[in-house]
Amino acid sequence: TEPPPGGRRVLVRGPGLATGGAEVPELAGRYGTPTVLEEEDAHVSRVLRELDGAALAHIAAHGTFRADSPLFSSLTMADGPLIVHDFERLHSSPYRIILSCCDTARFASVGADELLGLVTALLPLGTAGVVACSAPVNDEAVVPLMLALHKGLDAGLCLAEALRDARAAVPGDATHQATGWAFSAFGAA
Image (cartoon, rainbow, N blue to C red):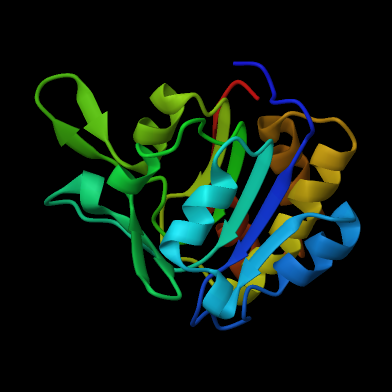
């Protein structure tokens, strides 16, 4: 997958986070003129419209994994859940997507050799790289991790390298370290 022309960035802040998605305003200042969706603007249809064809998407929201029906796992937006199936409506999936959300890297085994979840839905749709979390995490500890991750991306690193360096940059206490190791990079971007 090739990055889309223009390098459009989309930053989304869902409701109800303990920190209010504190990394989003800092990232907005860093990126110049990104599309920022928050509060009532972060509704499902608008978020999907803006994610379509984005070079980089960052979503700070509550994530919910549904083991009984993984394609109904969701991210909480202002007007309700953005479910995995909704991403299939995109004409062009975001090139890179960072999910600063709990449980977005969880999968359910289906049959002998298939895993279903948000990440496994995004990659076949054309997303080249995803950073997602496999557990519930501390909202406050996510903020420095995400800021360091984006610093690595700004320096030209791929998602995996940027995540590696972000883990090394966060404070050394157990909460920050566990948060860093709960996130994984998937794909080739």
